Structure formats: structure tokens, C-alpha cells
Length: 117
Image 1: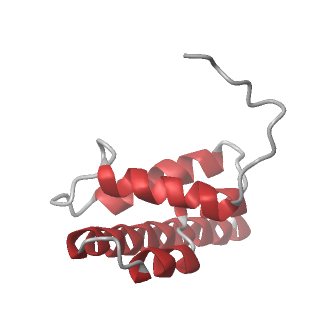
Image 2: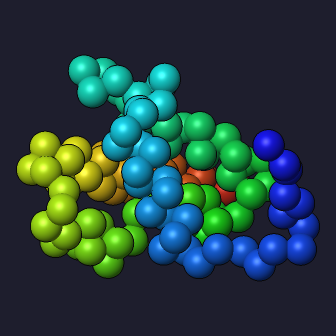
């Protein structure tokens, strides 16, 4: 198998990258994400918050967390996917929205705390 250098390639569009991310998330969930674990969204949001505290921009982290609604709608409207796959997409989308909401709350609390000091 030949390896292809990524240095000269143009970056993929957000929708393409998000589509791959969505498919990976649906087909093989991350080890720290357990559907039975009610604290999983808090843990994932905390991981992203830790990256924010280390200097990553909040906007870039939000883009990493978020799945574009247009992409999800496109996936849900395709007739080739089975109903169980569509339900998985909806579950992943709702999970990511929950993580994003928790992350935004952590950022807001950090800014409020800094203003009070």
C-alpha cells in the first residue's frame, strides 16, 4: 500500500469532514462513550474544555463538537439507509448537541469567573 502525502492536498470541506466524523461515530462509538453512561456528555465536554484551557480557540472546538444540521438532514432524508441507521444518526446528533451545550456552559462560567476576579 502506498502512502500519500497530505501536505500538498487542499483541506476537505467541513461537510465532508463532518460526514466522515458522523459515520465513524455511528458505526464505531468512541470507547469513552457509553449509551448507558449518563455522564458521558459531561466527560466529553470536559475533555474539550480542557483543550480550551490549554489554548485552543472556542470556535474551533465548537466546530469539532458540532454536526451541521444540513448534513444530518441530508443523511436522514436518504432513502438508502435503514431506519435503525437513521435512528443512530439522530442519537449521535442529539448527543453532540448535548455535549456542545455543556461545553458552552463551561466556557460561559469560565468567562464569568474571570470577570469576577
